[in-house]
Image (cartoon, rainbow, N blue to C red; front, side, top):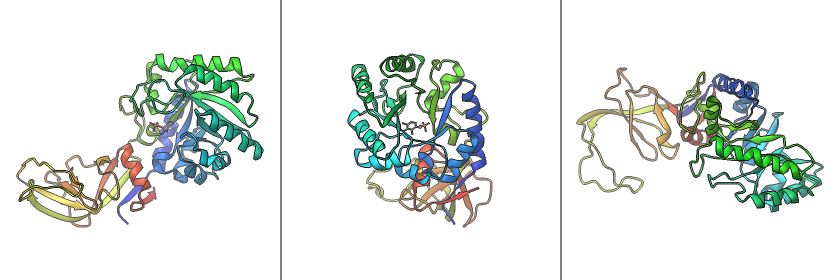
Amino acid sequence: MYPRIEIDIKKIRHNTETLVKKCSNSNIKIAGVTKVFCADPVVAKAYVNGGVSAIADSRIQNLKKLKDINIEKWLLRLPAKSKIDEIIEYSDVSLNSEIEVIELLSNKAIEKNKIHQIIIMVDLGDLREGIFDREELFDIVNKIKNFKGIKIKGIGTNLTCYGGIIPKKDNLSELVKIKQGIEKIIDYKVETISGGNSSSLYLLDKGELPKGINQLRLGEALVLGRETAYGKPIENTYDDAFILKTEIIEIKTKPSVPIGEIGMDAFGNKPVFEDKGNMKRCICAIGRQDIDIDGLIPIDSNIKVIGASSDHLILDITKVKKDLKLGDIIDFKLTYGGILSATTSPYVIKKIV
Ligand SMILES: *Cc1c(COP(=O)(O)O)cnc(C)c1O
């Protein structure tokens, strides 16, 4: 059945093992982030077999799907007040910045006879989530001290997401200082300093990740073998663990510029075309309703994606050496956005290989 996404879990496990080893040399643990593949339990297990110390997802529905996997679960997106009950039930650790919510978590944890662990999020300038004001931060820690259902497991930050700010020795060193400040207020050790996502990895290679940072939350690095500060491939990893397969439904030679007055395309944009003369084109049975078309990378580099509407993907196959036929399958590697959209699409069949 097509379109289909094939997930090679041996490659995912291999990528995980490579990164677990690389990070453990610097005493860093990894939380494997599952949101990009919609928390498929089989793929999540490949992370676990590869040696991650926790599983992390932004959605509590996803962590619920993974409840039978026996490993620490982290909720990455700040808890919504309306989901406190499920958060206490299905996550062991959550990332937090709001004292009002932390109090609700504490009360619910006490009710369920649990201790919920939190990572206090610090905004180091990317301006997405986290406490920006340091006075507010220590104020909050003073209040948390009295919450019987909460343990401060650690502090963390998230960069290169909204503001595109790159993690550096300078900004990440702040976390180490803040941790020391928190330990002066509470009477136990802060176990974890979570130094960001796949964009912090490049600092490891440069030996510039500040000492004290002992955990990273990795998604893209594990699924695509890429660090995300500069987009470089990581040595000894695969970038093709996820492959999208689509079927050809038309092959014809046509001009490269449409005939007639050009109005708007199916999405309200006025398209522009470059005249390359006649080209051999094919249509695959997949479109913008199925996945994010910009996330497709043809494995045969002679194939060029030239456009797509809701249900049709148009490819330039003029330079393809193989004699393609109707019903043949075209394979694509995927970007992060491509994997995200394909694994959450109800129109794309998922197959573990
Ligand atoms: C998605 C997410 C991550 C993982 O990011 P990658 O770039 O895929 O490594 C880490 N932390 C938080 C808070 C996230 O939302």
